[in-house]
Length: 308
Length: 292
Image 1 (cartoon, one colour):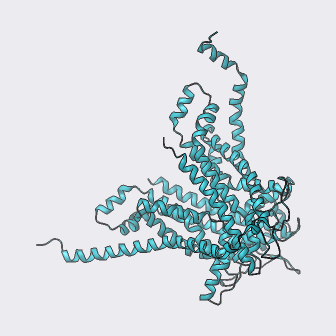
Image 2 (tube, chains in turn brown, yellow):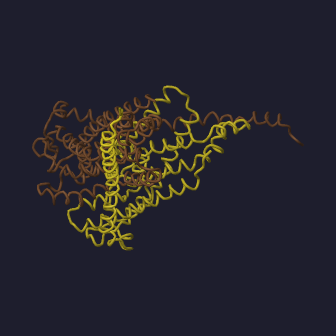
Image 3 (cartoon, one colour):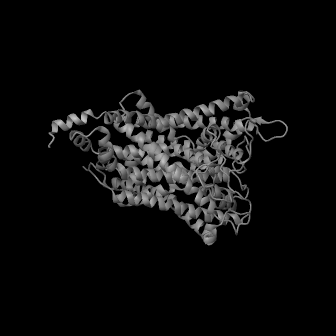
């Protein structure tokens, strides 16, 4: 017996299961997609709840404006976060000094000077640099960069802000280079060719046309990289030391927000102690810092995209 | 009368050309510097650590004595971690991507999910550690198990997998969708039989790169309390374990100089692990590279 197409369609329409499946799939997939939203909610709720518990024991004012961070003291525990922020900013500052000129120079070279074949070789190499685990960079900072620095400047201690700063800088170079290059290569070719036709050199095109046109994208890449530097953990906890200090000294041991969380997590800070809750308060501060940076970067690159 | 003073023009032009060459050199040098760092890094690791790599190093557990310290527990532990992270993160990532690309309506909820994924990608990994510690280790009472660590890592790399999968799905041309739907296939049939097969190379490439990030991450493992010294192998996902980066971190932070050699050897193994994963990704990308 042969069934006509019409009959087959009629049969298929009768299959309730299939219809049910077709209706259920989007619901299931929506639930899966909401996992990422739940993760964010989870992060915020976790940090806020535990931080509030922390603030029932330590005053908010002392936390934000205190200049001494002495959680392990036997006498009086002090939780003023400024020393940890100072340590974080020291490393970030050095990282920016290293990464911004090198990153943007590479971006200009790749987008304005390099031929296609050169670009095809260099970009993957930079990607490798971005894929090196931070623990490896930390080891490199501790066992190579610090000794090299010490041989030039003997006053630098084993744990200091400069060495991890330089290595964090190296870590974020690929990020600045590739995001800035994206921004520059999306500057329309016509503008560039117009300038070249008027007799500009490639450098003049890069410096007076491409870079200004891509500026908000370039700044966004730097801001994102700064956010990454602030949140970087392993390099600073291996090579930065664990001495939270509120001063301007770059040559001695420091402690960053992330390194403090690692220090507490490594030891046994008993559940429920003030030290235990302090890692959430520090984590929350870190989260706020990086979120602000990410939102700013998002805003900047969006502004850039609207121009063309 | 001459309108152009030739000499002056030549002189100025030469100056501009010199500036151009100078800055070209500077830009090239900066790029070369970044690559040089990679070379120094590789050279240092190999000269420091290669001598320590032996069968014993691969088959011994860690030890207080540097010459006996091996990487067995960490190597097997990292494989166990992958066994949890890979399915969890790929199912969640690809599922989210299919929803966003194929089903999501253009409304505020969808926009919110997209913005949320972008922001999640910028959250420091150590904060994910705090999330894992609170939710998986304590609230769900998984302890410092492979499962707790695996879920934490999965959430950490989720944004990367979602974005990569979205791109792969988006690059499947609309004609294929239209043809499949026009033949009477349902939406889900179109997705499973047409879109996913076409998007799989892109999805796999992105997922492997994300997984290799999870292999190298240390901070979340420290925060959720993954131990270092382990003298047994895990037998299930609820056992505790140690992983390559944890082991390297422990060796690097010991005061004895001899452990630096052991750490370098561990790093070489980790980097080989990562290079293998990356080359698989490259092979997939090249083999299935299709342009529609």
